[in-house]
Image (cartoon, rainbow, N blue to C red):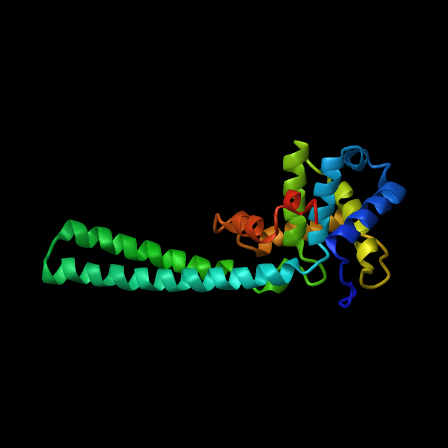
Amino acid sequence: MRKNASAPPLAIFRTQFLRVLEGYYRADPLIGRILKDNVLQQHCAALLWFTVNDARERLTRESTRRRDFLVSALDDAIRGAKALEFVYAKLDPKPHLAEYLSTLHSDLLVKRQAVDTAFVNFKAYGRDRDWSAVRYAKDELERRLQISVPNATLADLLNAADKVAGRKLAGTKTELHEADVEIGLRRLAQRTFELILPFYKQILAEHYAIASDLSAA
């Protein structure tokens, strides 16, 4: 995908994105439903805007800040648990407390290792496309629509967003297909930490602004 392509401001993107959906992708039943509902239109446009703007940079900064905080907190906790274990094992022997603190120390070491595993290099989110933004858009659309969004529909939405942003795929491919979306989302799940630490979606929700809040932008 072309690196120098950038999305227009949301208000412009929204108008052009909906026009592209109407002109090229209305045959998709789910897109047709979105186009018939003004609230869904606004929500969908804002979500797809995240897939072509600077969301990756914002999430990178937040993930780095969150990782540094967790590393510092866990390192402090590990030192504290180790010190308390020594106190109740050697200075003021209380075997039941020493045993509990030893277990706690081991648990904290596992969590510390999980943090190192969790915060992967951000290229893991996709070299040409930030698939975490795509995943967030899919989850939010499904929450609003109350049905699953097929990968074929998601491919159409991404192709429309790319058209508006002036982005082109690498090589000879001219557009995304269902299989491309399936592969991208599967690789995201394999490489990132959503199954390791529960606040993955919280990070996304905090740092991709809520689409409905942008409807007047």
